[in-house]
Amino acid sequence: MKNSTLFQHKQIKTVFSFKELIETHFRGEQNAFCWQRNLEGDFEELVSKLELKDNVTEIKAEDLLTLQLSEKGNLARKLILNDLQLLTNFGASPLLNLIKNYERDDALDFISTDVYSFHVDYSPIATSTFLCTYYGASSEILPNDEAIQKILLPEIHEKLKDLYNVEQRDFEAFLKDHYFDLHYEAKSKAKPINLGVGHLWRLAVDHPAQTGLPCIHRAPLENDGELRLLLIC
Image (cartoon, rainbow, N blue to C red):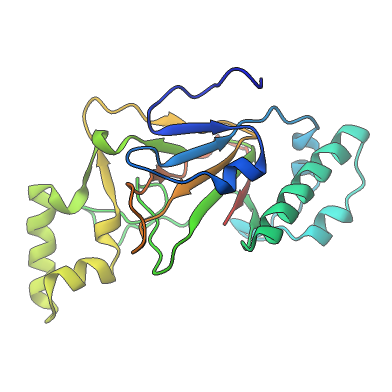
């Protein structure tokens, strides 16, 4: 796998170590780095033994350590614990989530701002988004030139203007306060890129020091009857 890459796109740079993942700089359209891996271990067994307490349940390291697993299940656990430790040592705050489904945003019938909508992450400080799907449906990213901000679509813009008229404040601030400016619509011939299972991704975030384009991404619709196991920070 060292000499071949799964993801052939100008937006994506493939790396083959955690060191390379965190030390490579985003530039221009290249805003998604993939530590390409072929993980060994039985992640399905591990997921089957975890307890889902809410639709999104945070799994702690100690929860993993209490599980009675086969040799392959134990290998999967070791890989996850190692990823958590690598990111923690780097200074990140990784979360391991067992997911049935996320909460949907249906407050407005003409625009959605939940994680199933294509969006970019924003931070007031320089940072990145890390994620890895160990089991279940995988996240997707979208090339920036294949998307348009939802607030620029005339029908949505006008409806937001009508909504804004009820609330006495600056329109631009109104859009930011409700995160409308972070969400995107895929263009008609857009081709989302599935991030696959097992790879650790680093995605560019919209922040004041960011010189390149932030990475547009979304959570997938879950497969029927199947949970997801996702690391994110």
